[in-house]
Image (cartoon, rainbow, N blue to C red; front, side, top):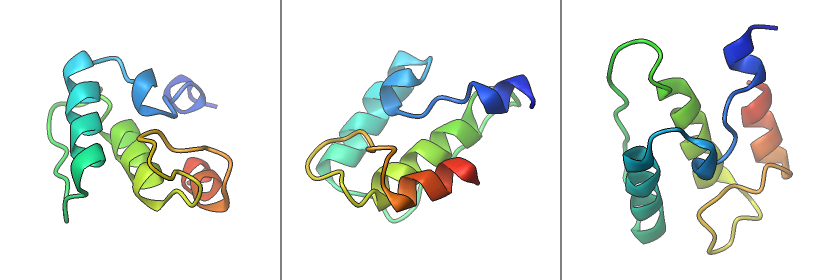
Length: 81
């Protein structure tokens, strides 16, 4: 398995960039936007961040928390691709 797929971050707190973590946390805590645009050069974590946002928005057991549970059917499905 490719290194970046094996060790892909699974939660917002796992992301490297502090600015990205804070921005996502504030966006997902207040209200979910109708679209997110991930741009930038290769290797910044756009796909990983998009998967985390998808899990957070679709998580069945999230409640008021910002982080996805990574245990429900939706989270597992998104993690598996």
